[in-house]
Amino acid sequence: MIEVSEKNAAPLQLRSKSETSPGYWRLAWRRLKANRAAMIGGVFILLLALSALSADVIAIKPYDKQSLRDNNAIPGWLPSLFPSVKPKTEGGYARVNDAFPLGADYAGRDIFSRLVYGARISLAVAVIGPLISLLIGVAVGCIAGYFGGWVDNLLMRIVDLMYAFPSLLLIILIMSVFRSAVNADNVSPLVLSIAKLDAAFGGLLFIFIGLGITSWENMARLTRGQVLSARERDYVLSAQAIGADNRRILIRHILPNILGPLIVAETLAIPAYILTETFLSYIGLGVNKPTPSWGAMIADGVQGISTYPNQVFFPALILALTMFAFNFLGDGIRDALDPRSSRR
Image 1: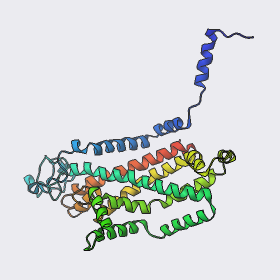
Image 2 (image 1 turned 60 degrees about the horizontal axis):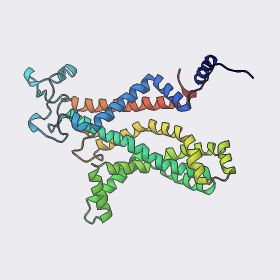
Image 3 (image 1 turned 120 degrees about the vertical axis):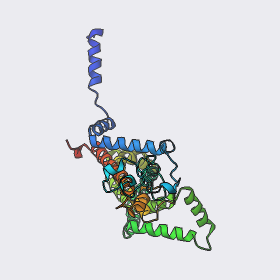
Image 4 (image 1 turned 90 degrees about the vertical axis):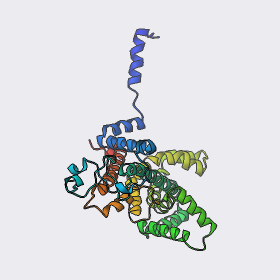
């Protein structure tokens, strides 16, 4: 019998610990950290979320406070960025007021404060939109892919029917019908209660309803394909052999193994949700005024873009940076979870 001294045992223990390979999620996190664009996008989104949560502290003025004597005011540094804007001190038309760091809109409201509060709207859509899509799409896709047969045919025909309507047009129709019904003479108590709830959400409820109805089709198809592949795997067949019921197999075995690609897909779809809300606010079907939204700010500023370009430039800039950040982060998460797609 061979005895091992304490002096020889220590290196063996260290060697065993060093040879232990990191787990899947740890490797994915390492690959994500190595992607500089994804990390920059993640840091930007984190800072945007923190500023939105602390908007009451960061904003220098209330977002709805009007000062008509300061309407269309500009800060003193703005002419250096936009030489076409001429202040009154130089014989131009623009009123200079450094109390507004990014200028004031047509009603004398601080643009910086409205941008900070507007981040709440875009980030709320970025969270609620994918969440609704995951809840509905994953449920439909799991049921269709696992059970197959007539259940699969029925659910997929419903998905095909939803695909027949343009999503953006369907959202516009839904919101127009809801808001016109609220203003009708004979309003049912249900519609009136929904209208009050929408007012409490600042006009976001109908946007969430529209996104929820139209955003789950792609997720349902993706989930169905993943389930069709996963249900033939050995771990699923083993669970069926020991008598596990369908609910347990779907929730405990299949869903955790397909959740990664689904989350990646929804992360990449977040810019589309933000763009949809921005477009709805731009055409007047977004949040209720005076709740700030980047799309509504762009729509208001377009009318004076030649004389006061800052009222369009800054909302458009923050919107573009946010969409770039989500795209970079989504690409990074996809590469991190799927090493075969990583760009070395």
